[in-house]
Length: 119
Image (cartoon, rainbow, N blue to C red; front, side):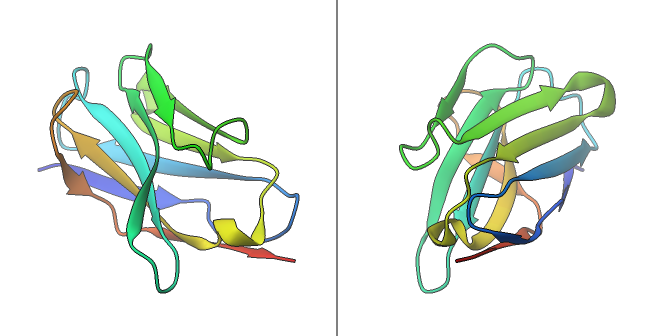
């Protein structure tokens, strides 16, 4: 059974940085696509960034481009999301998700980690 466990959230001032981690287990993820999503208070969940587990292609929401970086560490079975130049509007619960391939639905989700950016 796929299990995704996020960590690394917290409270940070505007302009600061955080690195979120997502520890993945229960499957060989070589062909998976991993994503980060977020849900801000009172808003719908939105896509932030995605990457093929074996590296290569990555893609970002417009709001994340230039500030956030998604990466994988195959040896640690971990996906990261580096958050730089954080803004108060980045405040949200961030979720890690896994898809069995490009173009397929994200079927597996973590429990989320809270990121709060103060102004």
